[in-house]
Length: 246
Image (cartoon, rainbow, N blue to C red; front, side, top):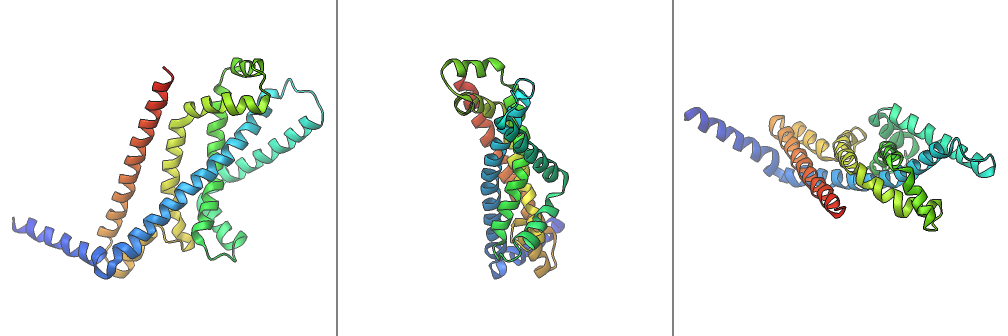
């Protein structure tokens, strides 16, 4: 009992030192958590927009590679598809930490808004992975769905918008949820370019207090709670979409 009481007193003193004293929970943890959520949410929006566009271009090229007639439209599609392929190769072939350093120290070197740079960097990075997720979803849709859209008088863009993409979204929702969770955890590298995220906030507290246990465990628990909430949310959304199909 004495050892337990001593251990609890030590934990309490560490908690007060790391979080309560000097309002460190507000200055570092709360502020860092806010920036983490901002970067993750806005980056995933950018990633979905880029991913859908790239996926449509890539899947259109793949589906019409053997049947399309040569001409100006086909040449444009080949060029855009080549650009998309280069984008996917570069983004997926280099570490995200190197990419965010390039954006922060080279491309946006004059910017003082590290959170905005992080949003752009993580959004473009996520777009490459979302593109392949959506492309797999589009390619999994039966060709008869395209023909059904054409029979209703839709052109290719309208068929994609109203028939193919909604079905593909339902099919790839679990993979998209996983990508959002991965992106949330990837934002922890933003501290390398002096962005105050949750991990950086915990690290600063370690430097101020010379106590590593409480700040790092606290940050890990916060990430864990957010991930568990997202998993529950995506599971509910997936189940609702599945029930709507019945």
